[in-house]
Structures are given as structure tokens and as C-alpha cells.
Image (tube, rainbow, N blue to C red):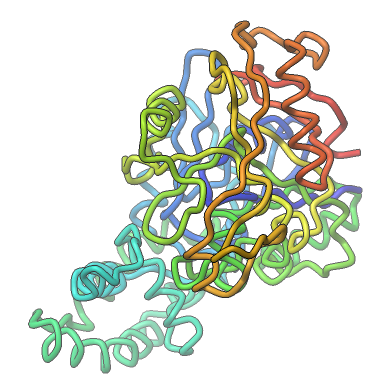
Length: 428
């Protein structure tokens, strides 16, 4: 049965939540395998709008088992804030499973994150300040706290003490902040332990058994390809593996069990935080895309930087993820633009690049080479088949498909749950 990975093919905020929700009624498990509460998904169901940050989008689909797997870092306060908010709105959250091997974000991670960004000044990365990077750093440095540790207070205290030993020197002597005590951190981490315990399990075992039982699994990435710690625009990236390979290490299933990889792209491009962005617009069109597309972060509220569609990075995402399908979102935002530029290559000091340069300097100096496509004026929000789209909208989709090297299997034409055109079966 299918084990499908869903990833962002740009810099995030492409509409992965809607794509996940689109498949929700056909899958048995939705698994978040990387990141933390530093990203968000918006799902619109009827007149209801849900903003999710840490929880898998599948938690909104009846009958689906939502899973927070081992590759995620978890802020327990945020977890229960989100759960309680959904419970108040009548959503059943009782099926949620959390990996015992997932790492925990402690208060000192958030503190380190914020003071470090301030200290970096103009060299800042543009983090959300939610402790994600420092939690992953502790994981790699082998001084992290895992979910299992919350159920043994003695072990937890020992691990917190080890984690704070160096951090307190840094906070006091470099950042002129007060030291953080072991006791306050342990108390903070234990306050939700009893409520958390029934959810925590060996999710790798659960997922592999589900595949053995012919269940359908959807693996949902946080962030996106261009923010992947290995394959993104380093160092302006997140601290986890946001590409398809991360689904394997971040959930504990074998690579041979993955049957498909879906990439999600906007019909234009956005980015938040710092870092190079070749097609970024600083004119009225950038403002138009931002306002018309509602380009403000679900988690942070930050305005997103906006630019035209970049087929170079989509081709790159296709290659490093092994994409089998694309979901194209927000096509409706482009309605009413007479000529729509699409980036087909880069110019770097007079040299044409048809593929993405992985050298940081070259990418930083890349300027887009555009081709213009004819736009359309008709309202497409009610279209539910490809043939119902205006001819120029169809041509735009076909052009992007050819440039990006992957078939476009679904097209978003509005924010509503059903405002999607399905061209090919995403699970087929």
C-alpha cells in the first residue's frame, strides 16, 4: 500500500496543509517527520479555518491516526495549547501518537535561540526564536532531552544538568543573562508528563506494522526543500531534514517502503526570513502578490517576501526529492495579470545557469532569466476540472509542468477545502 511523502518544493508556506487535507480521507496515518512549531499549516474546512503549527494536518481528518515522529522537536506547552484549542472546537484528538524518541524543546532552547539571533545582528539567520535550532543542536551534540526521559525524573534531572552546564556559562559570560537552574527546567518539563504519557510510544514500530497491514501512510514535511539543512540555501535554512530523505530517518521506516513523493509549489514563489531569493520583487507586483495571496506567516505573522515562479528551484527540488507529482497552489492569485514572468534560468556574472548553483556566492548573485506567459482575467475559483480553466491558465500550468520536470497532479484555485482541481491520482 502507498507510503507517500509530501514535501514543500520551495522555501515553505506552499500549502502543504491543504494538500495533506486533500488526501486525508484516503489515508490511515499522517506522519510529521521533521521540524517543530516553527512552521504552520492553514486548513479551511467549510467556514472554519484551522492554523496548525506542531500538529500534523491529518488530525483534522476523521479516522486518521496523526503521528509526531522521532525527527520532530516538540515544545510540550505548544502541543497542548494546540490540542486544547482543537478540543474546544469539537475536534477529536484522541488518536494522536508521539514518538518517545522525539526530542523536547526546553525553555533554555528558546532563550538561547533569541539571544543568539540578537547577538548575530545583521548576520542573523532569521529564525522564529522558538528554540528549534538549539534543540536540534543538542540532539546532535548528544545532550538532548527525549520524550522517554520525561517519565524518569532522576534521569531527566541528570540530563538537564548536563545540558545546562555549558549553556549557563554562555548565557552569563557572553550574553549577560542569568543562569537557568536545573530545578526550574525539570519542573517546566514535568508539568505535562502525566497527560503526555498515554500518547507516547514507539512510533517506528507502529508505522512499520501499519505498512505490513496494508495501511496507507502520508509523511508530511515541515518547512521545505530550500530550507533543508543539507540541500537548502545554507546557512539560511532550518535545522532538520525537510526533503523526502528526512521522512525515512525522521520516522523510522525503510527507504524501500516509500512509494511516491509529492512536491507542493505555489504558482509564484515566497520566502520568509533571511537569505537569497533570486525572483524576489520589490515593486508593485511584490506588493500585489503579498496582499492578494494573503502572504503572512501562519506561525509568526511575518510578511512573506514574494516573487515570480522559479522553475530552477523546482527542478532542483524534483531532483533531490525524487518527486513523482506536484501540487500547484494559489493559481487564482495570478488572475488579472496580463503578462506573467517565469524564471527559467539564472544569470551569474554573465554565465547562464539552467540548474541551481549550490555555491552560496553564485546563488547570492544570481539574477533571474525570465520568460513571459500570457495571463487570464476570468475567475477560476469555481473551476473543478482542468478543462474549466481559461486557455491561458491551462497553458501556464502546462509550461510550469514542462519547466519543472514533474507532472502537475493537482491545482489549487482558492482557499476553500474543495477549491482544488485533481488532474492525476496522487496516491496512484
